[in-house]
Image 1: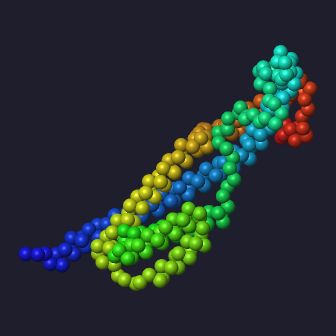
Image 2 (image 1 turned 90 degrees about the vertical axis):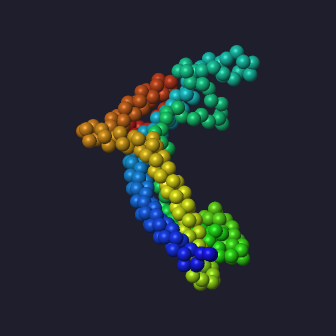
Image 3 (image 1 turned 60 degrees about the vertical axis):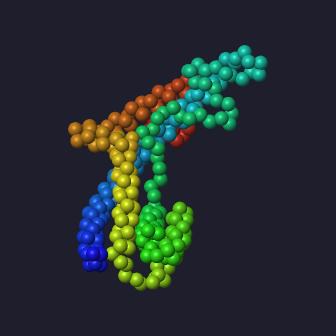
Length: 276
């Protein structure tokens, strides 16, 4: 005896309810991750700004002195036996000669590179682009189409959506968003709704994985590791950042002395840095 329609709908509805409940839990977890990521980025940016303000100028000063010292050392090194007269060996202080026009990377390692903080306009633009992409992807994914004709239409729209998202073109995404009003208002069948929610869950799991990885990478970054160490030292009553400043000023003073011994001159900015 063939199954009736009602006997097929009941298990499908139960599966839909289970999927909706799972989606609700994953959306809630996604919201917690977004909050954690925002807080992590904010703490990291705050520490980056503090570090760049207090240590950044000293690092730049030290690098300039190191380059100046290398140039002075190379100029005073005896010429080699090369018939062209080019200096090939290291100078008196072990610094290799740098030809004119050639750059040399500073030897000092930074705990992390300085970076410009994103503006609120940039952040809002990226958030709007991301939100619109998610909205359109959920609505126009080919798997939620009700028939072959609608699937073809969805594939065409998703191609435009992906292209606009890759280019971060907010205006194009907004135009595509308005096209949603042109779609026929048809209540989806349980099977179509199940397919749509399955696609949404799969996309949500991908976003959750990417966000978890981003938070993990930030927590393991050199800047965050340094921030954690400094906060631990601060709780123990030690100002490690101030100690680092004193250590760098001591190195700078030693480099300046070597520069003066070799006949070099200190700039006015360097003298002001020493006074501070």
